[in-house]
Amino acid sequence: MIALEKDGVLFIPPGLRAIHASFTPEPCLMEGGMLWDECAIPEILDELLWIARHQVGTVQPLAFQLSVLIDALE
Image (cartoon, rainbow, N blue to C red):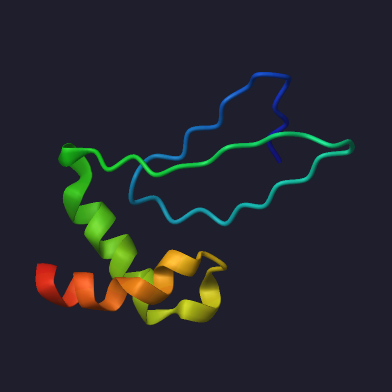
């Protein structure tokens, strides 16, 4: 478990398959995003391929749009 304080940042490196969930004991504003580092392109593509093949493993709506992109990149 990782607990963040106010204004804390959790950075998950690109391509790292990490199961994560957020819980806040009180209302909170959170923001997420994806950082595609050019030094990690193989890991990122591998992760995107895994997401595209395991749709039930993610709640990200983008995952349903990745198959065409991954086919083009392969």
